[in-house]
Each structure stands twice: as C-alpha cells, then as structure tokens.
Length: 163
Image (cartoon, rainbow, N blue to C red; front, top):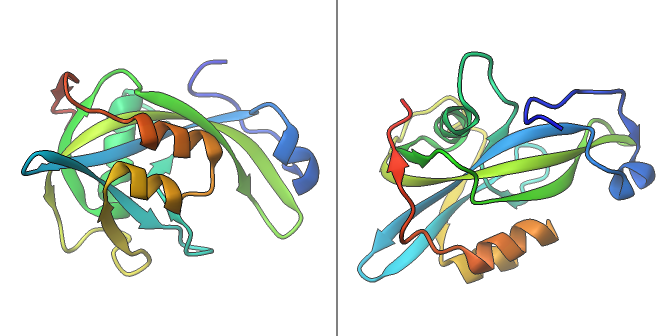
C-alpha cells in the first residue's frame, strides 16, 4: 500500500484491533543529544492524555518526511531536521468514536530537534516531555512503537532540513 493509503469506513473497535491497516499516517520521532545520551520527545494525545509521538496524515505537496516534520511542529512546536527515509513503522487503531476505529500503519521519521517553540498550534491541547528512549518505550501503548523506541539509535542518520 502506498504511504498515502486510503481512508475507509471505520469498523467496530474489536475488529479494528486485529485488522490489517486500511490507512497510513506519518509520525516524527523527535530526538536530541544531551551530553553523551539521546532523549526522545513524547507528547500527550488530545483525547486520552496517553503518551504518543506526533503523527498525522500525509499532506499533498509534501514528502512524507516533510509532513512528519510539519506534524511535529503543529503538535509539539518542534523545529529541526528530518531524515528522508523512515526509521521504522508501527500499527495502531485510530479511535473514531466510542465504538469505531480505523486500523492504521504509521511510517516513523527521525527528527533531530533544533528548537522547541513555546507557541505552536496545539500548545494549549498537549503536554510534551523528554525521555530516554528506553523510558519512553515504557510510556507508550503500541507494542511496535515500544520496540522501535527501545532500538532507536540516531547516530549515523543523515538528517536534512525539510522546511
């Protein structure tokens, strides 16, 4: 399936949980180096307050990496450099209402954070916090994202400005 994916009719949550992805999203795994260690940025979801990484739909006219960087800005105030190839993928169910959801695949792009803005589109709707990758893995619900965080090592990645 292309990264643009296709959005279909939501399905009952129990079915969505075990279904193959019917849509694709992009996400930013935002990181920084502090002394000799790496930290990753998690944000809270708007609806449940769970810890997640910034993610959203692909955007017409932008590469998937650039769309991930845009989502990271809108949801977390991140300005930085993004790697053009995904560092991994994970699946989750996007809850549409109390009974329905869409099984989604997510392509994850590493973003080296240069600056965190205090004012950004969703700053009054989310919290953000830095974690060591292993600690961040304990905070997220999605098993594949948890595994991605545990093995995340940004050394050797080639970021570029996708502004």
